[in-house]
Length: 417
Image (cartoon, one colour):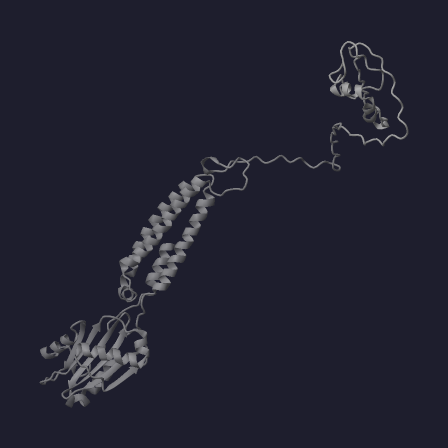
């Protein structure tokens, strides 16, 4: 498809070319004397002399009618604008005849196609020139007679213009802008398809790198084929390419260069995706790194079937109670006189058995401390800080008994010996 499209673009607008010809006027012949041929060859010095005719009756001047194919087309604006048309035909007369003056008469003959005609009159001769477009080239019809015989041969030039064939509209320069747009769009579509194939279709096998390499090699082969087709198809449009600043080799190189860039891009894309692992998923279940650039398959989570007859009751959630220590609020201050403490009998130094009471809540029973010795000497302080009513909330707490050593057998560190 790419080859056929390129062929149609290059060949489809090729302009057919044909040489301008006309019937030989009555009383004229193409068996011309040497003077007439030499004159016509001098006019066609930088062009191609197609035809020369002259009257069959011989005289000293040898009137001449010549058809000369000249290189280069007549541009459209030179046929549409009088000033540009006059400049073009005056330049042609200066190159062929050597006439530098402006013509006596000038006309743009409108038709299909439009052509130009002009007349120059000198002291000895009358020269008539017509420029006719012939596609990528143009043809000059030159007629020269003696000034005295101009009225006699005036109809010869007019009849030749009326009966001429082979004229065609001027060719335009090769559409360089459309060609570049066509190439960019076509290669862009090929590149986009290749990117999708390398990035998506190649997984999991054969892999992005292999697919990119295969597509790149295929694109190189297609590029060479299209470049050869374009080079051959443009063989009939050298003039148009030259007018656009191009040539057949340069046109083929443009095609080849674009194709090679696309092929290299596909190869690089495949290798890059192979190294980076392709499309990166957010928080993959298999970890941050995937081996060989391919994501690991994650098994789907099993989904329990819906219950029959309604949703089942949820199982009870076990609740574990953890006991937390609670600090009791402070007791209100005692009112009234404080009763006197009971007298303590001195006893052995060993710790006595704690009196019966409510069970302990886990606090260890206190032993002898320095505070107890201090309270022994100051019983009122002990009463102020210790002998307070125990609230009902803390009845479960164990009662600490402070055993004081007697004065005999050794005292406390703070007591008197």
